[in-house]
Amino acid sequence: MRNLIAAIIAVLSILFLAGVSRGEPAVQLSDHVSLIPGPVNGVSIEKDNARLVVYGDPSGKIENAEMVLFTHSRRDVVWAGLGLVERGAKAVVPDSDVGNFTNVEKFWNEFTTRRFHDYAQQGTKILTESLKIGRTVKAGDNFSWKAIPIEIINTPGYTRQAISYMIEVDGIKYAFVGDIIYGNGKLLDLYSLQDAVAEAKIGGYHGWAGRMATLINSLRKVAGRKPDILVPARGPVIHNPGEAINLLIERLQAVYENYLSINAGRWYFRDNYDILARRVLGDNPKVNWMPWAEVIKDKPPSWIIPISNSRLIISEDRRGFLIDCGGRGIVDEVIKLREAGKLTGLDGLFITHYHDDHTDNVAACLVEFNCPVYATGPSVDILEHPGDYRLPCLTPNAIANIKVMPEAHKMRWKEFTFTFYDFPGQTIYHDALLVEKDGAEKIFFIGDSFTPSGIDDYCLQNRNLLHESMGYFYCLNLLRKIPAGTLLINQHVVEPFSFNAGQLDLMTATLNKRKTLLAELLPWDEPNYGIDERWFRFSPYGSKARPGRNVQVSLKVINHSNASRTLTAALNLPAGFDATRPAASIAVPPRAEKQLDFNLVVDSSIKPGTYVITADVKQEQWNLHQWTEAIIEVE
Image (tube, rainbow, N blue to C red; front, top):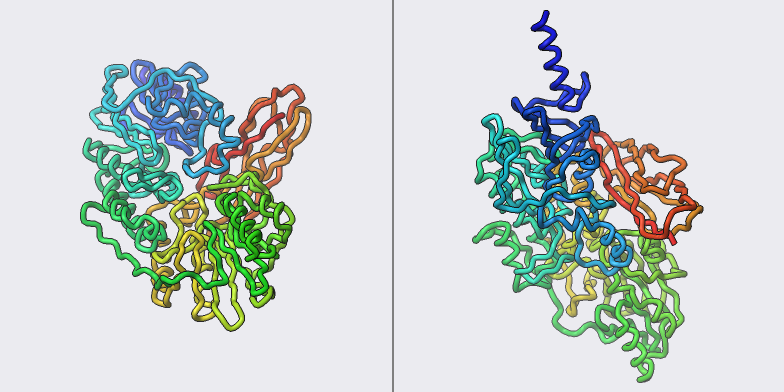
């Protein structure tokens, strides 16, 4: 009996120490190491009646720990360890990442304005409140806990600053590697890798998965340590590290070669594009480059005047129709043409897309030239309410009174026929204008969506969706339908150009292949989740409120899956905010976007300042904490 009681006490002690109740047991990885299953892989290392935790406790049942080891600062992982730190556990964080743990209030205060004109394209899964740090560590550091050795190695890639912990316990070499891998040969998403590539002189906006080479180097570094078990922050525990890492590298390289082969950036960065290929694919990269489109070396037709990245159409009676207006210099140049007698005025201004270099000075232009502004339906809301969005290169300057043109609507102007199109190429919110002059040229003004070397999808935050009849599939199909002989004009490219049928087919086939490759790389049931950071988002992203007043926000979700999905969203609100309903569910058909509306109550005693709300989302097997955010400025 005494032996039985002792055994029961021992089992209960283990359960108590692991912080789980019967029916929700931890998964024992070895004698002293247990996995706490959940949205984050909490790991408890127990010795001498003490506990060290890696990542955190997703169950919320561990009462205390001596230390919590964090690999990086993303809030969608760090949330799991916050409770333990608040109860006295020492937070161990990367020295290079301290600012994202301890200075987050400054980040959000500045981001209220810095989110406009943002070309750095870094993720915003930043903590909403600073965390008390107990210890910082850096590559090469070695320390021990209860005589268990812990080695630190640098493993950036998925994030700019990240480390991994190599811990040998129970005769097993564990590698706690954060988000640099998700199970066997997979990665949680691709958009988190967006970054500048300095050696190729490519900025963050143009740096499609710019940290992929860094990630591959980190993976190889981990493999070189020959761990027995990899425990990522999310995803299955990996018992075949070498095989899983090699498979991930192979898949990353296949996706990158596919991307490079038809990318528009090769036209802009032609002298440096081989650098991109070598960084990821090796010293002798084999890329199936698409032949460049036929380019018209002569100047555009005489009725088109290039002005920076705008184009001015001039009729025979010297009236004008302007396409985009970003810089003040464009307005000044149009004024000069009027003063020189070459232009008597503007009859219209067409907007291809919301980016600041195409929209910043629309209002200034309208002061000088009172004319209507045209756009197609999908683009109108972001042009009228840019502050409601979190997307690249936003202008703070809203455009009012837009004339909304139906898809494929034709309009006669002077000796021209205009046809307005939705054209979701460079970004999901993008238009194009087909201009046919009587008895003369046909020009398709495509904004920034193609160059002679391919498609303009080098910014993963632009939401370049890979669904049939959406995104570039839609654009390529439309290019097949426009009149024969039509020339394309990208407003950042001087020369008009045209693709032949073979090139259109090659781009389409390459995108279809990319979707297959991404399905192998990403753990989602539909790969678009892994390239669309905004599939779940707040609207408005930024709003203002007053103490004692209510504020309305919505959560919008696009269901990328092939079947209907029921999604549950739960708000995380800072002190001083309440919601009439903090959580709600909604059924979303495939390929559709729906929204959940919330009424927030702002306490009358709340102080003015910047507040960040976040939302959790559950759908099918996914339970994602603090996945998206919105900013509320209390005045």
